[in-house]
Image 1: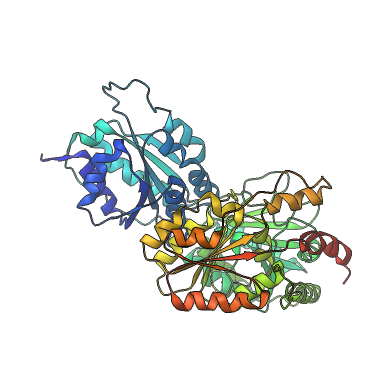
Image 2 (image 1 turned 45 degrees about the vertical axis):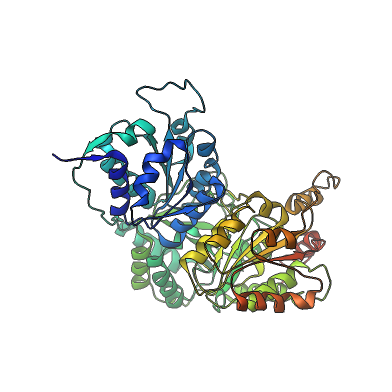
Length: 550
């Protein structure tokens, strides 16, 4: 049988999986693989930090359903992928990580840079494995992609040592790439669900991140149209059903104490489509309270805040298609209270959207961004106080137009995620929305964005502090201490990378400035001072006073 260099075989297996890009920072231990990529159809996207590479790969998986691929060397390169690995693992984003390693058969470098990367990755991946035989490459790569992409998706890791990459392998055959088969839900469980929905008086539908699959969206929308059941969503379920739908209640951006929780408390049945307890709970279950039907690809992870009475486990698309066939509108359903709560929620969301104060208050900020973004425009949110405001107030007409993370909720992911969205969606408006703290964690990827020729607006909200933790301090009645910092001149900083830099000086100029940036194209950074003094008043005090008064 003919032989082939192991690194060439590895790249051929990646091509066989349909890999378009590899994001990464190669090192000495990747040189054979790098040389094999040189003549491949796969594009290497060189980033400035392994975190940027990992976040881009995870977002590729999130937006396409196909595993994104990232590359790092051993030791510090691999440890820098830990946060993106956890990000993909908790957020259910398919991703394959490839790391190098010193020769495992014979090495003259002792323990230099060596840590147990496979052992480190195991708790935060679906699969982590060191390749010790070149002839196993084809099977291991196919298995890695299968596990990354099947429900529940997530991160996997392959370690390719330097000496194995340089070996000769039998050319062998490449394995067929089969689409995963998802079993249908049990018929008896469907019958029980229909009976529970028909018997309920005030049912509500919750849409979670697991429902954000291309095949699920239409059956879920059809279910809402057929039954007339109002719905709300988690932060990561935004946009699965459009945010302007007449039955859309809003986003459960907080776990309790919001207007939406008035409706949730009144519901006698919640149909939970695709929610996972890895995301912050959108409501807290109480014993002997509202019943819950869990509808997901996988069975429920039960804990003290989530213990559903019925589980519909199977393909979400076919489950909701079958429920729509089996159900008719129920005359006994009463949604009057829900519609009154909905009106109050949407009235509250509109408050402050024309406020002229400067620095900009969050309500005006969200409203102005919404004005300049078309229905298919994509915003990628980093993690900070503004994420709650956008989760609550920003309407998302289409799926995957609001990219946020409410699972690991890591800082530093907003800019790389927006870059990936821009690469996959040329011609659409894409905006990264970052706090000054989160932006600086991976701001070096501005150079990557410029080098790639992306059209991207990076909105940096400056409050010179870790604003969400200051809010938590205020809520917990702790002294305001220890969370303020200084910042660079963001305009000059952007220009140093070859991007355009802008600073908002008056609230009235914010939206027109964003329009000009999008019209011009290229990479633009917009620094906008933000006033978070509204946080406690609006999100805590005002809601607690009005809660459930209707």
